[in-house]
Length: 328
Image 1: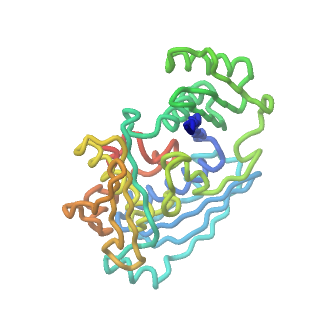
Image 2 (image 1 turned 120 degrees about the vertical axis):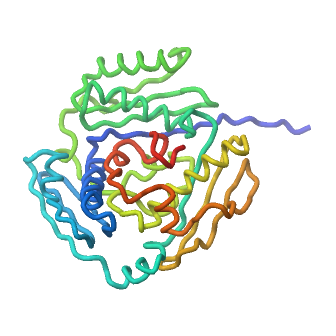
Image 3 (image 1 turned 30 degrees about the horizontal axis):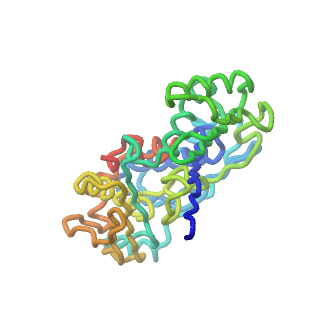
């Protein structure tokens, strides 16, 4: 008789602090979007930020009646010791035509997800990595990363790298947090500043770009990614708004069907209002999403009230599981 070989299951997720250079770029892009929407709810915004080594560059497309001091917004977030370059033009008229008629402002596949592993309805490793990061950031509000690996559902190892955090003190705080989050710390491998203590972080140590932390922004490394990044984009871009709607649908189905895991897939063509695909996978069983959801860009924007200045907060620790409207 053949023997069944059991393999251990490992799951790993990381989180980065709001002072990580990529997250700083996300926050600048979304802060500019917020200011546009605050003055003109119909603003069309696609702003990208790149920063590093003394220079911040803001570029993209913007059509709005708002007056936005992008330099001031950037310096509010990162301080005034950085130079700010701005190269922003109006949205392409060819894109605008398709959006004006109610069509999608972009194309691609958007993924929604929810599971019953945590109160946040997110994978356990994602929540643990994020909550540890938030805990450490309270003491060291600087650039930093955390990473947690689960083995068969239990914490196996923890990595914590934080700027200006002495290794011994960092490890002590990680152990204290673990003792509150876990029954036992025994056997858990802790790597605190594994490359050594570091004081040079953020834009002084590395470059950042809007939209480069997609797994952190979404559901972690074990869930498929859909369209492009979220930050800096107004809700006419379905790679943002439809991803939020997909999360709302996933949460609804998880609760209504008392399921363990829900995947949602929405696919759009630029300039076309109705999705080309609207699938929901309920504990492995495929269905078409119920018709009572309006999945046109205008319908999504109305349902979630997305023309509000709410986006800078989403750029800090992830777009799901932080109590946003599409999480409930």
